[in-house]
Amino acid sequence: MELKKIQRVYLIGIGGIGMSAIARYFNFLTIPVSGYDKAKTPLIEELITEGISVFFEDKIHPIPEDFLQTNGTLIVYTPAIPLKNKQFSYFLNNGFIIKKRSEVLGIITKESYCLAVAGTHGKTTTSAILAHLLKETGIKITAFLGGISENINSNFILESTEYAVVEADEFDRSFLQLSPTIACITSMDADHLDVYGDQQAIADSFRAFSKLLKPKGKLFVKSGLPLTGITYGIEDNSDFCIRNISISNGSYFFDIKTPTTLLENVTFNKPGRHNLLNCLAAFAMAAEVQKSLPDLVQALATFKGVMRRFSYQIKTDNFIFIDDYAHHPIEIDAVYQAVEEMHPNKKVLAIFQPHLYSRTRDFGADFAKSLSRFANSYLLEIYPAREAPIPGITSSWLLDQITSPNKKIIPKIALEEEVKKLQPDILLTMGAGDIGILVKELKKKLDSYEN
Image (cartoon, rainbow, N blue to C red; front, side, top):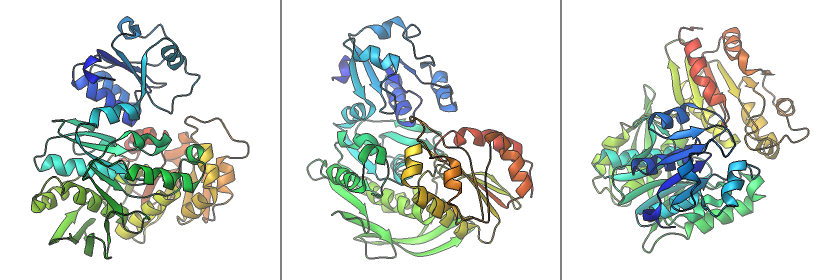
C-alpha cells in the first residue's frame, strides 16, 4: 500500500480509540474520511465535528458513493469487528484494499524515528507522557495515543512526521506490525487469553516485538522483566531509577538517577507508584531525542493525565470521585495502592464493570482478590463488547468470590442512588466498558453532593 495513492479512507469501527486516531491522521492530510460504528459516543461526536462522516447502520446503502469505488479507497478495520459485519464482508469480497489498523499504523510510521510503548498495563499513560514531554520541549511529533491526553484533549498529534510516538497494542499481536527506533515494554502479564491462549504465548509475542527494533535501536524494559534492555525502576539498581520519594498535596517529589547524572526534586502530579514507573519510562525514552534533561523535568510537572486513568471527576474536602479504565486485576491493585497512598483512612466505594466474559472467567479468582481489598465493592453486569455470553460466567458468579464486607450487584440506573445511600468519602468507578460513558452524567448528579 502506497500512502500517496490513497484518495479516500473508510474505517470500520471508527469510534475506537486507536481507529479514531487513524481517522484524524488522514483527515488532517485532507484525505476524505468516513466510517462505521455501532453507536454514537462523545469521541465519535468529536470526529463528526471535525468533518468526518460516521454511519451507525451495518448496511451498504448509507456509505457515500465515492467510498464504494475500489480504485483509491483504503478500508481500515479493527480486529474487534465481527466477521459477520456486512460492510466488512462487502469490502472483503469486492476487491478493496483492506488493512488492519495496526498495519496502517506500521506503514505510516515506518519511515519515522518511531518511539513505541508496549505492555499489558501502562502503555497508554506512558505514551501520553512521552508525547507530552517531546511536544512541550519543542520536538515536533506525530502521536497516535490509546487515550485522550488531558493536555491536548485528543488522542492525536500531527506536527511533523520525523518523530512518531505510538502506543504498541499487543491485542491480536498488532504491535508486530511496527518498526520502532526506541521501544519500551512496561509489563508482560497475562491478558487477552481469548487471543493468546496462555501466558507463554503472550511472553513470546513481547519477545518478538523486542526484536523489531531498527538498526541501532534501543529497548527500555521495566526492572524485573525477563528481557535484555535498558532498565528502569523505583529504589533499585536500574539504569534509570526513581529515588527519595516524598508526597505533598497529592503530588510526588523525587530524584531521577540516569546512567550519567542525578536529577533532584522532580515533580509529578499523577497518583500511584504505577504512574511513577510510567513517567520514568517516558522520561528515559524522551531523553533519547531531547538531550536537555532539565527541560524534560520541567515538562513532567505539567502533565495533566489521560482521561479515565485515575481521573479526578470531583475533588473537594468532603468528597472525591475518581474514574479509571482498570479492567485487569493488576490494574485494580494499582488503583487501590494509589488511593491508599494519596487518600489514606477514607471510606471508599469501588464500582467495577467487568469487561468481556472470557477475561472475567480467566481471571475470576484474581478479580475477586483485588476487589476484596475494598471494604465496599459493587459490580455492574459484565460488558460483553465483542463476545457472546459464556454459560455460568456472570457478575453474580464473580460476586460470590468477593469477600468484601459490603458487596452487591447494582443496575446502571441506580449508581447515584447507591452512592448517596452509602455516603463514601471516595467513589471509584472502574472498567473498560460503557461505564466510562456513564461517568459524565454521574458527575453532574454528584457535583453538589457532600457526604
